[in-house]
Structure formats: C-alpha cells, structure tokens
Amino acid sequence: MKKIFFVPVLALMAAAVSAQTSDAAVNEDDLELPEVTTVITGGSMKAGKDSVPDYTKIIPDHQTNKVELPELGASEGKIIPAENTAEAAGGKGIYAEGQLGGGYPFYFLGDFSIYRASGPSPFSINFRHESTEGFADKKAADGYFVRETDITALKSFSGEKSSHSLSAFYRTSDDGLQSESSEYNSQVKHTFGGTFSGKWKFADSFSFFYGTDGNWYNRYSGFETSVTDRDSVLSKTSVLFLEPYIGFGYSRNSFGVTLKADYQTQLNLGERDAFRDFDGSNKESSHRGQFEAGVKWETSLVSLWANVSAVIGTDTGDENVIVPFALGTDWKINAFASERLLLLKAEGGCSSYQETVQNLETKYRYSVLGYIPQETTDWYGRVSASIPLRDVLTVTGGAEFRKTAFENGEWSADYSSMLSALSGLYGILPEERTQFNTSAGIEFSWNDFKFTGDYIVFWKDIPALYDKQNVLATALYQAKDARWSSMGKFRLGLGEGADKPPEFGANIAYKVSSSIRLALEVNDIVKLFKSETRSYAHSDYVQKSGNIAVLAKFQF
Image 1 (cartoon, rainbow, N blue to C red):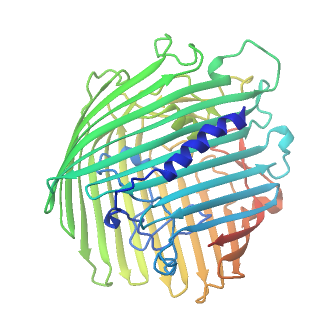
Image 2 (image 1 turned 90 degrees about the vertical axis):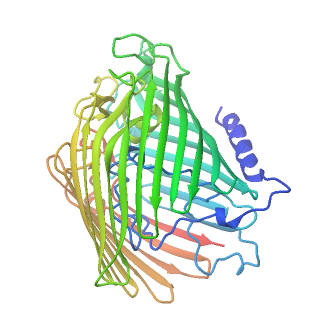
C-alpha cells in the first residue's frame, strides 16, 4: 500500500519541478533568498546578525496579524556559500547538498537536497529521513522508537507581470508508544499536501494575488491486542484541509493597502463518530471565512501598519462575528556604539485563528483530538529590541502578553492525565490562558568565534512543551580556512517538573575536500553516559536523548 501511495506523490513533485512557461522570462528581482548571516544547526537557536529573539518556537507565526503578502518566486532557506554563485558555476546554478550518517543508540540520518535558488528556473527537491531505534537502555521492541520521513518539492516561475509558485510535500512519522498502552503499540501519521500561489501586477501600483493551501492528514495506530470495540478517534483519523484565498494590493511610494479574503475548511473523511461537538453530537466539518483590510507606511528606517478583519464560521464560539485587529511599528535607529542599527518592534491588538487537526496532532506527540478545533482568540501585545553595544556585541530582549478573548481558548495537549489507561494517549483540549513571557539574549561575534545565549521565562501560564525558565546557549568556532569547525550547545530547563541535568552537546567537523566534510556529533552528553532517558513534556513518555553519531556532509 505504501508503494502505491508514493506514485502520485512523486508524480506531483515531478510536475511541480518541471512546470514552467516557454515564453515567460524570469524576473530575478522577484527571486530572493532569506537574509542569513549565521545559522547554527543542531541547536535550539538560530540567530542572525541583527535578529531579535526567536519566538517562533514559543508563539506560532499565525498568532500575529501583521499584513504581509505571500513571498512569490522565493526559494526556501537554502544557504548558498558566497563562492557558489551562478556566475561561478558557469551559469548553471544547480546545487546538491546533504548529510548521511548514523550512530549509537541505533540512529540514522539521511538528508539530501537538489536546488537552484536563482536564475531562469528556481526549484528545490528535498528528501529527509531520521530514525532512532531505542532510547538509552530502552529497547525499540518495547516501543521506544521515533521515525520521520519528509519529501518536499518547490518550483517558482515568473513573467514580466506575474509570478507563481508551487509546492508539494509528503510527511510521515511513526512514534512508538513505549508500552504505555495495552491496546496500541505505535502512532503512524501521514500528511500529503501542497500549496499554490500567484501574483499579477498591473497599472504599476496595483496587484492581484491568489492561491490555496491544502493537505490530507491520516493518523492510525498499530494494534497491540485484538480488541475490536475501540474508540475510533483513538485508533484512526482522516481529515482534509483546504484554504483558498484571493486579494488585491495597492502600493505607491511608501504607502500600501491590502484587501484579502480567504476560506478555510476541515472535512472529516474517516468514521462518522471520529469527531464530536461540545454538545456531544457528531462533527463532520468546519468552515471559516475571513475578510481582511490592512494599510502600511514605511521608509528605510520606520514602518507603521494596521489591519482589521471580520471572521465568521461554524466554530467561532459564542460570537457570530469576531473582529481581530492589530497595530504595529518597526524602527531602525542609529546606535552610538556600533555602525549597525538598533532595531525596535512593537505590536498589539486582538488575534484570532483556527488550528488544524494535522498541526495539533503533529505538534503534540502521543496525543489525539476528539474535536475539530474551534477558534483561538487572544488580546495580545509584544515588544522586542536588538541593541548593538559594539560591532561584536548585541543584546536582545522581548516581552509578550496574551490573554484569551471571548472564551476562545488555546488548543494544546493536557499531559497531566491520560484519556485512559488502555489507550496510553493524552487529549488535546482548549484552555483559556493568560501568558506573560520575556526573553533576554546576547550575541558575541569576534573573528572566527560566535556565541549566542537566551534566557526565556514564562511568568504566568506555561505552554505544554516548555519549562517555566529556559536557558539556551551555543558557541561556534570555524577556522579561517574553513578546514575545521566545532560547536557546543547547552540547554537548561528550570521550574517544577523540569528534567535535570542540563543538556550538553558538541560536534567537530573536518573538511576533507572542497565538497565533503566529516563530522562527529554528541548530543545530551550526560544522559548518554548515564544511559538515562529524558521526559517528554512532563508526561509519562520519554524522548530520544543522548546519542553519538558520525556524519558525512557534502555540497556540489
């Protein structure tokens, strides 16, 4: 069955890569790579030269209402060395990179990419598989394993007045249930989907954009026993998600206006009793519409923006219409002690979004949804700053406040108690929240050495996947000739239920040729040598912890 399923996946990816118009010349101004100054892999943080604290793991991107048009014609974050330009490659501009390796306990990683980031036909294809069989002294046969596979393809093409992009992906995971369930031995999840986006420019200042996101999510459990009378939502789920959108934009000089409408639906394709409403009745679908207007004014140093929406649908709670809104500003100010700019950001208002079954069950392992999620609405405000004290030193800080509005709480896993001892699974439910989070960080860069550190605190309600206090640090050194490099990383969780001791990790890499690098990597060193596991989100489950691996990394 799995072989049959891969045929349409690979066919769609091939179409996404080969799709292009014969008479459309690419406008390279529409093709941009993300601005990346430093990326440290294997750690918990990614920080650029002028970046503010990375809150993306704490507060999802969809919780901000800032108006941004889709990035059309852009490739995903492939980092191309300065010497790997289209001119240096004779105009070819096609690269292959990846890493392959394994280690102890039984660990395997294969990650391969082929891409062209600029030029006449940008695209990327990526395959990644990572698996861990056994955690510390726990055996894979007892359900201590994690297996993940991702296949993605992206294609961008543009003409003089238009640009379009396509993507397709297939993701699968298999999580062992660690003998916590007497009915099931594993959770298997498949997601197959894609995106399409387009933009037409006309009359210089006007644009018309459109697109759709969609995926099919299927989750099922491997059976430990032959019991036939099972709760269907615990054993399997099948959901179709679609979100088409359309909009208009006007931009002239420093001023811009955006009008956008989108429709979102989640359809139950599984058993009729898989999802229920809060009144106990069956729930087969969810429908949501949003109409948004936004304005923005910006110069090279200042930007001001505002937006307002109207949200209607079947799952808005007690409100027939929800009106999210937001105001924000970004400032770049000359710093006295550095040539780099001081960055200040602030925004606030009311945010509202609807989570998907796929997102929630993927985010929270060992948990299931018995409902199609309702709207999550918050009053919120956030500020952040990046302050260069010297050319080699930057201090960052941020704060965010969120409080549930209209009783539309945040959906998250309740890891305090299982749904039942037989299932060994946790439930995902809405809960009203009041969060106040702060972050302080430091970044030091001198010659070939770089250090970053962050201290993140949740003063009120604590998200399910975090400790009350989180200390993160990464140090990186790379020789001037890039022949060898080394990195160390550190994470410490503090507060009630935090798993101790802290996590230490390190790697060292040596460049054996212009395109091949060998690396030795050790993760969670203390747990590795003590042969102990680390708890997952303060639950009865454990996560993969200490391991040691040898990796071969290449780029052509």
